Length: 156
Image (cartoon, rainbow, N blue to C red):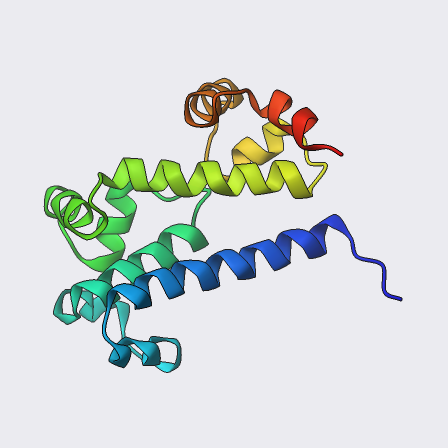
């Protein structure tokens, strides 16, 4: 029997998260969107895509670049001005870019706390926080407890 490592669990979680994000976005669209996985849709032509595809492509970019993603970098990546992109993100996600990014980061951090033995400072860096104290504050505001308390409560 193959022994699984914490890294295997993290990879499985990331694959699962990506699938869930994609399925969520596809459920908002018609069945024609099911081909997005096999699509060669260029990211630079994003503005010409239906809103559901725009949302999925942007979420994929955000998730893939979680440690260094910002509104300005994401807007530039897709060829938008930051102010316009901010409005587009609110339209696509019904919340601000920052709120959507924090949601993704906090849920990724929660899973890393559950599945790995990485230090909280390393997890903070992995999800895009340069300052572990800011990460701790945001995590506590989001989940009602500190990352350390969450990790201790989650352990069997």
